[in-house]
Image 1: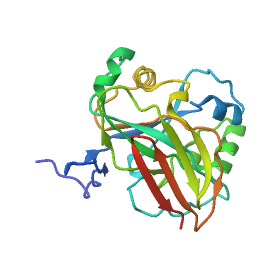
Image 2 (image 1 turned 135 degrees about the horizontal axis):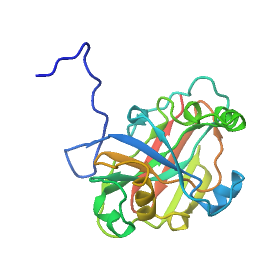
Image 3 (image 1 turned 90 degrees about the horizontal axis):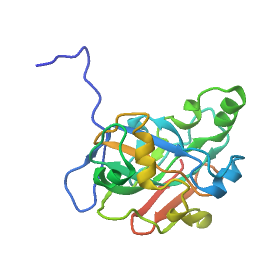
Length: 226
């Protein structure tokens, strides 16, 4: 029996719709600028190759939980995203094999300390402080899925005011392509989550804001900034 010098952290997990078993999170990968309008909004080309950044597994905020306004920022942004949950993995996965690895989908919000991200960009530094902070990945329950990926409406509102709206079908790189591209950089495995990018309209939030996100056919997500 293995012993440790202190108790290891608990496994981070996400509820699964219609099941008692939970989805154990191995890691979180995120795709940047994967909707053409948002890419233009952020000053990028509309068909750049996909690029990735990561968040720690314990950045997950479970459904129904409030989100504490993070430290060292005055410009906290929402980014509504389709999240892919993997049940299998591998390296150098072919696009036409990617669907076999998908367990399901969820609604996620990539919270961003935009001021810290922009400062890092200006200096050519990593984005970790702007993207990979505590409680930066609110997520809905995962909906098990078979067949073609979701294509419908994706939207987020703050205090009842619509902020972002688009179609998942408008992603520059679709779900199978994202999984295949990620597998060229990492050996993917069951438990990996991939946030697939956000449409245009990212904007700031303040304490007290009520945030509600939805992806057609996948689910809803709501939380309060406290």
